[in-house]
Length: 259
Image 1: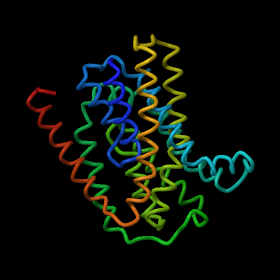
Image 2 (image 1 turned 120 degrees about the horizontal axis):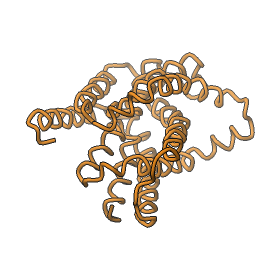
Image 3 (image 1 turned 180 degrees about the vertical axis):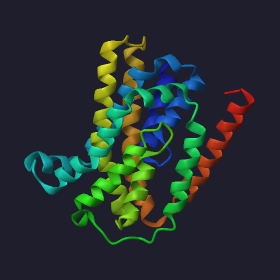
C-alpha cells in the first residue's frame, strides 16, 4: 500500500464513518479499487482508531464529564444504547465477517440505507434535547445501530433515523448518534485486535499506516462537525440518492461479472 492509497483510504473511513453512507461499504470498495483486499483486518483496525480519536477529541467535554461521574445518566445511556450491538455482534460475528469479506450483499445494503435516509425526511422534527433522552430512546436507537453490522448499512444513517423517530430534534439526533458510535468503534477495534493475534499482520509499512490513521482522524473530525450542522436545516435525501446510485452501480457490475 502506497502512502497516497493510505491517505485516500483514511479519508474514506473518516468521512463515511459519520456521513450516513456506510464506512465499511466504502472502505471495502476502496480496498478493492486499489487491489488491497488482503490488507483488510489490520488496516481497518488502524483506520478505526483514527475515527475513534476524532470522536474523542470532538466529545472531549462529554468524556471528561463521564470520567468524573461514571454513574451519570449519560454513561448509562451509552451503555443501554450499546447493548443491542454487543448481543448481535457476538452472536453473529462469524457470519458478518464472512459477508464483509465477500462484499456480495453490499449493493443491496446501500439500497436499503437509501430507503431509511429518504424516509427520515418524512419524520416531523422532534423536540427532545440531550437532557430529554430516555433509556428507552437509547435502547431503540441502539437496536438500529445493531442492524448496521451489515457492511453497507450505514450506522450513522440508521441511528439518526431512529433518533428522529423517537422525537429527538435533528441536531440532537446527529449529536447523540455520533456519541453512541464511540463504544461501537471501541468494540470493533477490540474484536479486530483479538483476531489479529490469531492470524498474521499484513505487510504494511509503518509510514503508510500512520498516514492512514492521521487522515482518518482529521477527516472524521471534519465529518462529525459538518454533519451535525448540516442536519439542522438540510435534507438527508441527497445521501439517499447517492447510495441508491452507488448500490445500483455495484449490482450492475456484479451482474455483468466486472466486480
